[in-house]
Every structure is written in C-alpha cells, then in structure tokens.
Length: 288
Image (spheres, rainbow, N blue to C red):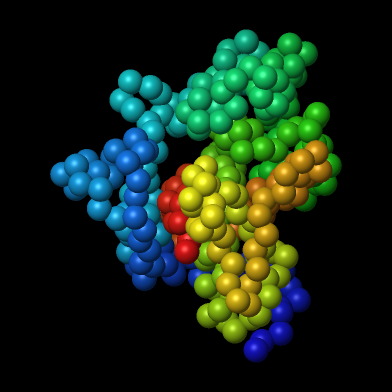
C-alpha cells in the first residue's frame, strides 16, 4: 500500500493524466436505461430499442450524451450565449428570464417558491443579478485562489440549480456544471485511479461527492455511490452550510478539467469543459 502523496497539486495532475489517457480509448462503461424521455436520443440510435447505454472511452461517453433537449427548445449552449449577452448589457429582466429557462432546461427549481428561484428574482430586483453571476464565475474559475466565503444561502447559493447558471454565465466556458451525476462519475474515476496506484483511503483533493438519484429504487441500490471497500465517498452536503463546500467541489473540478485539457492538447487532442462534463454526467448515471 502506498502512502498518500502530500502534494495535492501533483496528485490532481496525476489524476488528470489518468483521465486524459482514457479520453480516446480504454474506458468501457455500461448500464441499463429506463423508458424516461431523456433516453429518446439513445433509443433513436438503435431503432427505438431500449438497449443498455454504453461507451468505450470518455470521449465517446460525451458523444453519447442524453438529455431531454428537443428541437423546439433552445439548447444549453444557446441559452448560455443569450445569458452572457444579457449580462454584458446589464439587462437584468432578460437575465432573470433566461435563468428561469436554464432551470427548466435542467429540470430544477421550476417553481417560484424554490430557493434558487427566489434568489434569482431578488438579485434581479436589486439590480445585481448580472454582477453576482460574473462574480460567481470569477470565483469558480480554475485559476482563482480567492476565498469562497461568498457562497452561502443568501449571497451566492451553490445548488444543483445555480451551478447551471454559473456554467452558462462563463464566457470562456471554463466553469462546469457540478451536479449529482458529475460528482458520481468523478468519484468512480477517482476510486479507479486510487486502486490503480494502490492508495487506500480518499485524499481530500480527490474526494468528489455524489448525489442521490430521483428514483427510489436506484437510491436503495445506491447506484450513484462510487464507494468501495477501501474508498468511501460521501454524498453531497445539504442544508445552510452546504454552499461553500459545493463551491469548493466546483472549483476543484474546474481545475481538474483544465489540467485534463492541457494534457490532451499536448497529444494534439482538443476537448472542452462541456465535453468533459457531459462524459462524467453519463458515466455518473450509474456507477455500480
């Protein structure tokens, strides 16, 4: 058994290399799908059959991304471009409406009484929604070393809903959505990396937290929990003190993605934060 490396930056870099090596090949993953409409595009690939989802590499996992987008509604990229334009012109009313549309796209906080919905409304009414979104993006960017104390329930909430807004608001695309599935996928890869290097326990820099599935049956089977006998990954924190830890997970993921992209670029391979996020989103649907 190896001792835990003391240099977190080195460990994160080694993990980035582990992911980069599996971007083009060498990462098979599969699981059964459901009848949910999110899988319509996958079924369409296979003549309408509900065959198990699968990939042979992380880049193929990104290409096999499935969600409930339709041809009649804007894509996330289109919504992000519109939100960035509204922020640039300080059009608070337009930015507010686009935030709600992004929530609907993500299937989160769709009711006016939801906490993240209320935050958007109050920030827009106070004329600070655009600047708050810009500040969140700056704090979550991979090169930022400033404290994350602004992330709390009242100032900059970090939830499964607002993480989508912060990703959409990032002009350079270097802020990823960190949700239950992305966290589960990262946790699975981290466990496999630690097993490959003979490291017991989970160093904090690689402790990517996962979130519960919506299905009671999947929760009972803990299908999103990547933990193993020697590696325990905790669930995403909840409650009033969860926002800063979630922000830390987000920025650490952005640092990791930047390192992966740099290593792929050295191999003359191009990848984006969005592609990495989508790969982990698909892997993280079921990690057991």
